[in-house]
Structure formats: structure tokens, C-alpha cells
Image (cartoon, rainbow, N blue to C red; front, side):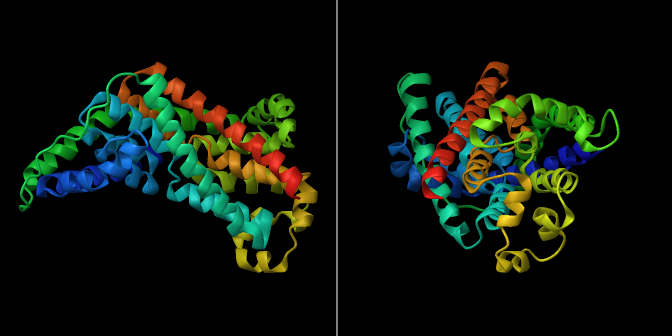
Length: 339
């Protein structure tokens, strides 16, 4: 039911973004926005029209990927929808901000600023590599006629949004539902506590790889859940760690239930890290890995919906999974030096 409700809510969000895009295009503003940002976007190998999907990505990456339809050329559109997942959405801001505060206290702003700077460089380099080595061919410039400002035609906007919502429903909607069911099954079966679940058993098999950055099976599973849904990350951590740590050291659960600022001001972060067996370097690796991982499987479904290519979707997943682990590893090495 959770996956069905999430997918149903996404239909409303996506319908809303297409109405906004249709409105901006119909009144003549979208063309001007693309024209204003084209010089900057061309420096990183993107198109002026890429600015709108990237802005939408701050709200939701699924919306950003879907908004790439405003781009005319396939090469620029493909580059944009692959780049969009680097943009941190509102759910990711919440999760990373929360974890940074819990793990690092007053140092959290420094961690957050570091994430932002690395993300800018990461986005630019990814775009340039895509354009030069993967999406080969001449990049078309922005050639467009600026239409006069005029009142929008609401009938055209409704048709514009409806057609694109139908496309998402036919190809992306059920992907999200099925994935949610599989995750739910892994958490609650074969019964008993989460420690005995199929997902925990799978996490223990990954623990060998997680030890490279100081993670046990709990952090491996939380990382996988974060790739499924950033909004589910904190809830998963609260459930997993409340079952495996003492109640008075379950800072995640207590901070979620009450006032986070109270626990931050207490400065009692060492007890939580000690109880979970996580060092500050490992915590930094976890925050970086979550920040640069695939935002959610809904974004992957949106990429598949727009490209109609399982190969491109799988390639995007493997790229962001690999880069998130790499970012976590580099952050772990930096943490060993700093802390």
C-alpha cells in the first residue's frame, strides 16, 4: 500500500510540474529563461533549456527528469536527465542535514558546505565527460525564436500535462509500486524482528564490502534503503538501531520523536557513535555516500520512462551506485586524516 500511495502521489506532483511547464511555455517565459542561462550551461556541456529540469530537481528528481522533455535534441535531453540525479532534492536535504547534525553537531555546516562544493564540481565533470566520451557528436546550439508574451491557453496546458502524465503512468508508475513491495517483503519476512529478515541477511552478505569504510550490516542496509527512497532513510535507521542499541543511545529515534535541537545542544554524539560502532570517519563516509547515491528508485523509473531503454537506466544506476561508494571511500580517507 505504501508503494501504491507513493506512486499515486507522484502522479499529482508530476501533473503539477507539467502544468507549470506548460504555463511557462505557453506564456512565452520558458524560452527567455533558457536563453538567459544558455551561456552558463554551455560551459558545462549542457543546453540552455536544461536549466528548468535542474531547478525542478531541487523539488524532486523525478520531476526534474520528467521536465527534460522541454529539450528538443535527444543528445542534450539525455545528458540532462542523467545529470538531474546529482541535484539534491528536498528529501535529501532533510536526511543529510539531520544526519550531519546528529553525527557532527556544530561541525554540520562545514560538512554541508563541503557536500555542496563537491556536488558542483561533480555535476560539471559528469556533464563534460558525458558530452566528450559517451554522447559523442556535435552539440547543437540554442536556436530559438523568442515568442511574444501573451496570456496562456488553458486548454493547451491541460492537453500538454495530460499526455505526459499518461506516459508516466503507463511506464513508470508500476515500476515504483513493484519495487516498494519487494522492499517491504524484504523487511517483514520471514517474520520476527528486522534482524532476522531477508533484508538483514542480504545486508550481512554485503558487510564485507561495507567494512572498507567502517560500516556494519545495519549501515549497508540503510544505504540500500536510501537509494530506494531518501524519505525512508531516517525511519529505517530508527527501526534498525532501536532494535540493536540501547534505548538511551538511540539518538536517531529520540531526535525524530522529540526535538533534534535538544540533543544537538547536549553534544552527546560520542555515545551514539560508540553504541553503533561507527567512527566519525565512517559517519562522514556514510553521509557522503547517501548524498551522492541515486536519489530514489522513482528517479530510475522516470529515466526508464523517458528513455525507454533498460540499458541506459541500468547504466545510470551503476554509475551513481559506483560513484556514491567512491565518494564515501574518499570521505572515509579524509575523515581518518581530519578526526
